[in-house]
Length: 118
Image (tube, rainbow, N blue to C red; front, side, top):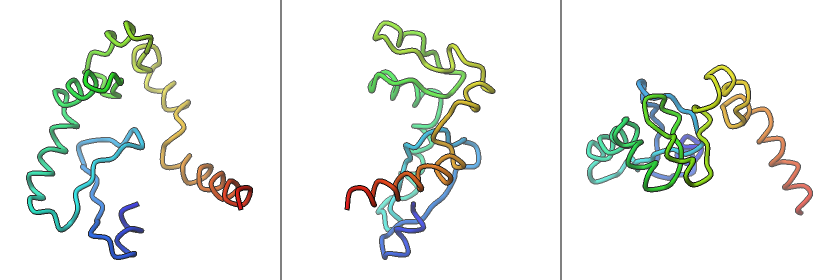
């Protein structure tokens, strides 16, 4: 979490792009003391764009949550993008990495794991 890192003295700060939904636990970060923060923000915007998601998906062999990006080619590798067989509502019901899930379950699971692994 950028806020937690910032409190510990890291050159970090959080910003959520208003025109891009957060649908995964993969985030793009730019240090606040970056030499070229505007260029980094442009790169982040490109990576979140349709073209960026097409390039990234093919390079990484991963699906995207963008509904306007073709992902049926993934079936050649035995992968099905959830957007190709679930409705948005079904996906939202089944997702397990949203803010509510992370807050309610992952933090508790982490605490249990830390206790068990002491």
